[in-house]
Image 1 (tube, rainbow, N blue to C red):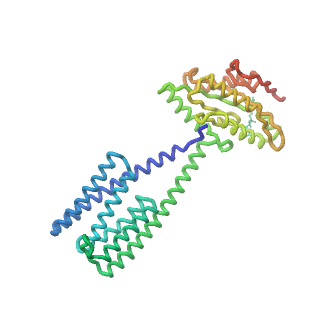
Image 2: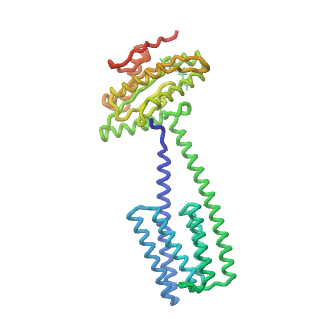
Image 3: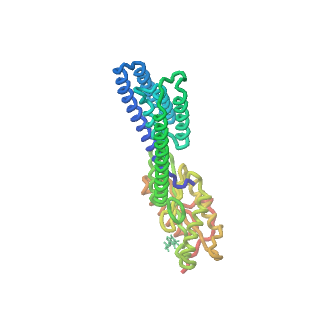
Length: 367
Ligand SMILES: Nc1nc2c(ncn2[C@@H]2O[C@H](COP(=O)(O)OP(=O)(O)OP(=O)(O)O)[C@@H](O)[C@H]2O)c(=O)[nH]1
């Protein structure tokens, strides 16, 4: 049987993906605008090669955006952006940028990295970038390394960058913790809103939604479905004779038994009090009657016990197929009429009756 599922969780995931995707686009566009600006500044300062290198990064970012627009692959888009930005910062560090201020751009990296990746990957990439920075700073004679920095600058650069990185790590860790707690809380509330507390089955509201969905599926594609409205016989007597706790236990035990009898795709709900509704997708009336009969006979044979006492539990059910009804209201009304008729004919039975149904003794009302 399908238990209440978390459709909200999927929607939240999609919303988050959409937000990250918007942020990536915004970041890419901002990076392009900056590169255009600082490239132009370098150009007018006479550093034409530097300007061209900066502008070539615009092409890489543009290609990354284009790739995402065509494939929708957000993971690769993130990876691509991190690699491009990493390369850009390495270049700025090795070349010194303008007036040896290139490494200052590195401060943009830690928050970006921790937001776009998880904490582990972010830390690993950051440590790798630190390593590159150490190599560039310590070996100014290496090919492609054109800048040389004073010892004071290097110490302050690493000290402030380390402080910023730790700060970003802690902030991102607490952001993730708060987010996960919120998601868990939302899931708990959503589950509670769809579930009957006593039995763990769907509640009436959830069942009404599912019935509406199944009915529109039927209207759209002609998929038939049936319902069984089930009522525990003389339940008031059980409560009166054995106590309310015994009644609760019967409701729980019956629900557990019903779960084992119906299919994964069927949905069982507590419709109210001691009444249950089972939705049987892609099921004809005859198949639904067979299932209801199987459930009835399992309940009749199952020994229900509470604190050492044996409880007399049987069920009656009214079954109806959508093929016999013009609307959902009509379907529910007909199932109710059938349930009434099962009760009238002596309880512990299913209506409408088919010849194959077993005949267990009817339940006698206790006066
Ligand atoms: N223990 C318990 N009892 C409940 C709960 N919800 C409803 N009931 C009881 O279920 C009983 C239903 O009684 P009736 O509607 O008279 O029906 P019945 O005794 O089952 O008789 P028939 O339906 O005619 O077979 C009432 O006594 C309600 O108090 C519940 O959550 N727990």
